[in-house]
Each structure stands twice: as C-alpha cells, then as structure tokens.
Length: 129
Image 1: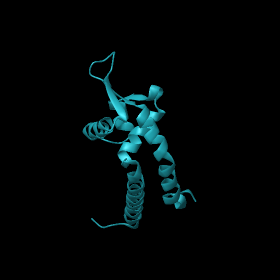
Image 2: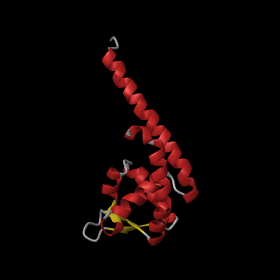
Image 3: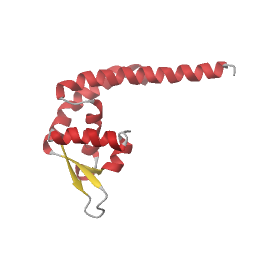
Image 4: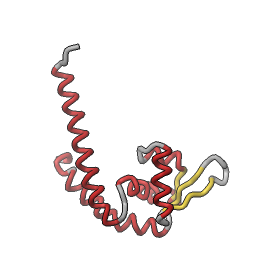
C-alpha cells in the first residue's frame, strides 16, 4: 500500500504530539522530584483536590488520570504509604473503594502546584500561540 501525502501529514502530526508529550512529561517529572512526586502522583492528588469531599471512587479516578486500574492502584499505594491519600470502602457498595486526600496530601499538592503550572506554561507556550 502506497503512502499518500495525507498519510504523511497525519503521521507527522501524530509524531509532533508524541514529541511534545514526552518533552512536557519529562520536564514535569524533573520539576516534581523536588516535591517527591511523579506526574501520575501529582495528577491523582490534583483530581482528588478537585473532587467533592476530596475523595473519589478508584474506578472513576482511573478514567480521569488515564491509568489502568492496576497502575492507579500502585500509584495510590505509594501515595498512601507516604500518608498523602487514604483508601476506604464505599459504605453503600462493598465492591467500591474510595481514595481520599489527606491533609498532608493537600499540603504536598498545594506546594507542587505552582511548579507544575510553571512547567506547563513554559513547555506549552508555543502551543497557545
């Protein structure tokens, strides 16, 4: 099958997205290290900080942070070990598990948030133009 000019344009655009994603993610990982967080940990803390009562069902959280259930469970496990998140059973559905932001988790998130936003502003400046 021959490659068409449209195919090349689409593939080039896709590669641009991948390069940008890798660049931004790498910059965020580097900057968030000072707060003992990775990108996924920060995203979980951010989603929980935005949720009602600072808690969310794990199933709902996995979709919003774009992680598989098992990957999210590992991230939440690390955050729980650091005292930043607590897990609890859903009171109305024993199959459901909630993740809840702790006071320490909110403090860590609030401390890391300006760094996160500064990296996004710097790395995505050309995308906004």
